[in-house]
View 1 (tube, rainbow, N blue to C red):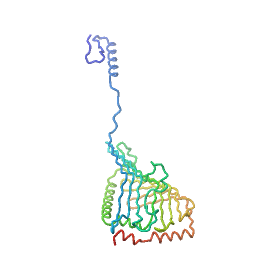
View 2 (view 1 turned 135 degrees about the vertical axis):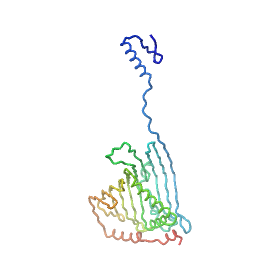
View 3 (view 1 turned 120 degrees about the vertical axis):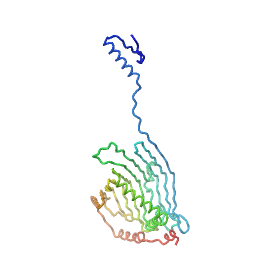
View 4 (view 1 turned 30 degrees about the horizontal axis):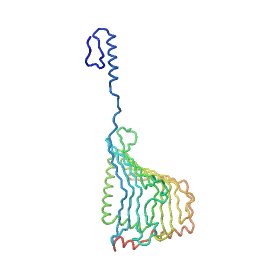
Length: 335
């Protein structure tokens, strides 16, 4: 008998012609090799790179051309973002913003009630929420891996979800119009126009080249629009919406479809409700290259307006919407 030097555990193979002994020796060899083999491990997950950054506060001041004092103040607080990119070219972006405020400074803009100086920001109703929920905006963006997608299904290239929490917007025509003029004229106007042109060209190019669908989802928990009768008048008209959800899809070829759902829209003028019951509405918009279809479904609307409310609306048109504040223009343009 000879012992094979390559066999582990000294399994001996007989040189005899006994068939049963040979088969038994081979079985012992197979068992020994299985016992000595390393355990099977799952394949490693795709590698990914992560980038995180945060901004505690960012303040941008838009100053007057006359005396270089601030007219508008743009403040962003508690911004954080995390970007994860994978080797299969997919990406995930998660971002949140604690507050985004656009306000005027009462001491430099003349007589404006303090409650109207914040044009855009968190609603007062959000201050009672837990700390994790005190954020104005959250964003989740992700690109899809369609390598194994079914050809019969819609291919989604990316999905963006934006969530807005209680937001308050104050409309004073003199402030909003001058802010628009500030942004659209001068250096900022040149930059904004160039950026808009480049964005439009990029969107058109992407629409022609895309092979999948871009999905955008917007959720809003509470939107409050305040329209005062004037900068120094305490009487206001309000429109409040408890919930809003909209889904927009950009399809290959440039077709855009949008679906919206609105919950509990209430309108009051100077503390008196104009709607007997809050409005609920569902709608759809389909935009093609040559046509647009709009569908709206409102189950019921019951509106009543008193003489006092009608007069207050007229005062709002005169004292707010149609007002041109010469003091603002002088501070903005320096003439």
